[in-house]
Structures are given as C-alpha cells and as structure tokens.
Length: 270
Image (cartoon, rainbow, N blue to C red; front, side, top):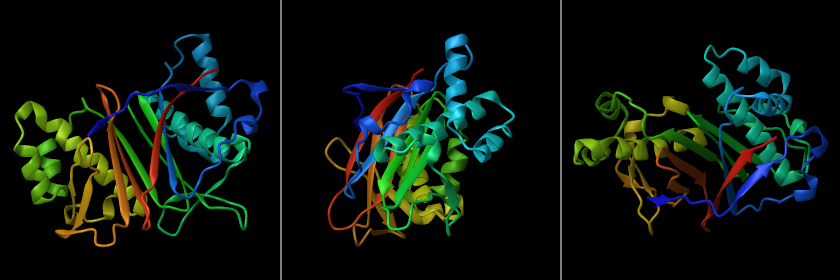
C-alpha cells in the first residue's frame, strides 16, 4: 500500500467575494479520476471557524441542509456538511459553475447522481467521511466509489470479518500479529466499501463473494468474484495510507486503458 504525501495543498476560498471558481477551471478528462481530501475544520472553536462552517452550509441545497439537521451528533452533522460542500466545490472546479448550481437525483440503483444538462458529459461524484477527514471522488461517466476510515477505529473485527469477508481475506487478516490485524482489516474494508458504493448496491451486495488481494508499492489491489479474477479487467482500485490515522480506498470502472487517479489535499478555508 502506498503512502500519500501531498506535494501542495489547495486552500478553497469560501469568501462571499470569491464568486464561482471559473478562473481556476480544471476540466476533467474521461481517463482521469480526481480524489480530494479535506481535514475537517475545528467546529465552532472561534469566530473564524464559525464563519467557515456557515460558508460551507451556504453552499448546500435545502434538501442537504434538511438532511444534515437530522443528525443527532454534531460530529456526524459537521462531517456531512463538509463532505457535501467539498463535492460541490470539486464539481465547480471541473466545470466553472457556481458550487450552488448543482442538483442531484437518485439514480436507478439508488445512488445519488449529478443532474447534467442534455448532451453534457456525465459527471459521477462519490463522497465519504470519517472522524477528522472528508473525501470526494469525481469521474466522467465512470462508476466511482471512495471510502476513508480512521485506523484507530475499533470495530468488532472478528465478527465483521467472518460475516462479510471471504475465507482468503480472513486468513490474511488473522495471519498477522494481533497488533497488525486492524490495519489489514481496514485495507480490505475500504476496498469493499468503495466497490459497493461504485456499483450502487451498498451492503445488499453479498460481500463474501467479492475477495480482494491487497496491493503493494508497485502493484494495484486485485478483485476476485466467486474466486475468479476479474476477467475483463473492468475495475481499477487504488489504496493509500493518508496519514498515521487514515486510509483511503478508491474503486472505478474502466475500459481497456488504465485510469489516472489523482489525489489532492485541500483545505476548506475562509
């Protein structure tokens, strides 16, 4: 698994005078996938952070704000707001449209989809958030899924692994020393979660029938379906160790040519 060290960090201007991001438009190509990662600003720690959060909320639609209000815990609500604002800012950077311009609908597989103008290239967006970090993945026409997790989370690892992981995945996890099992568990988990988000079936997909072989510094993760390798090479996966605390999994549908996956850290600044 590769580690991620950002060469530079974008500070996304949320000030009212910034208008759209059309002056910094970066069109997306069909053979490209972008992933943006943003640490969560400190919620309401001072006037500046309160202003930053208000500007993030100002980017969201009424439906998104209504959904955010349903969260009982502040942490979950702030993560939702930040992830959805990040997705809108990412779409804005790719198109030049105002972040507030974009609308979404539920697709035929139950996935939220960007509503695109007739004849326009279809953009696909996927979001993920965990404690301290949000992520957004963007592609043109291709199914995409992203998942970020904290490496210090404490799931019921053995119970979850036996329920949703293949025999080969379980063997790989429990072959590790006890202190090393959780990072390996989360490597498998982020790949599976990214894949089921990309196909739009969520956890209804029989996850034990999908088995991953973890990648290395020079080799991408590989997926197997019912024990057989992906025959058409129809999926491409990427996985990165982001910090000491976070891991990222990316799944994207592909054709004959590989997809360039670019990962960038951004700051949700004021």
